[in-house]
Length: 255
Image (tube, rainbow, N blue to C red; front, top):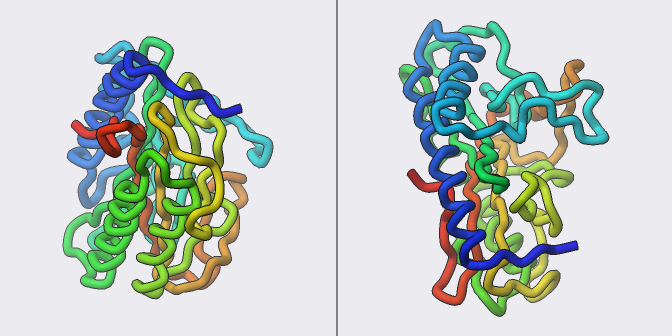
């Protein structure tokens, strides 16, 4: 069931979104050559603790996962698309890193993701990140009262296809509110004019995941969580929590 949020609820979600933004900024600031992924998780945990916020990631176990998620952020490096578990892996020069983070504050959730490079970037990685950001921007621009979910999906897909990138077909955005994952599911591919009618108070996590090799296939690591490209190409993931309002889309996970 889709829950439409009141203006007061969207304001409360904005505060949760600010915490997410701060946690992501802290994790990115901590990232550097030789820094472990667990250290990035520790940086994000410190922000959540200071804000008095909980983590919707920590202990989360959807039906596909063999064990609860053990961290407050997902850290996906190079050919990892999403859901990477922070481990002792130490970042290397030229790594492409995607970090996904959520926060639960006063009963409301926020969810966002960033992608960036460590050390000397590969030009192709910068192009991939830029295309992913453009796909997100297009999706947000389509998130308007009177449009439909398919309009957001189509906007994202159009950018991804133009960039020659693939996207994992089974994963996309989602409703968000009291829980991190709520109805409706928001595919990253779709036909315009189709799907749920967007109205004031609907809040969505919009999250394109682009794979540079152009394929849509992915595989899952033995940990049951980490999604990887099947061709070894790199991936980027960028996300915002966005409220649909009569005044236009309102991004709730900005700093």
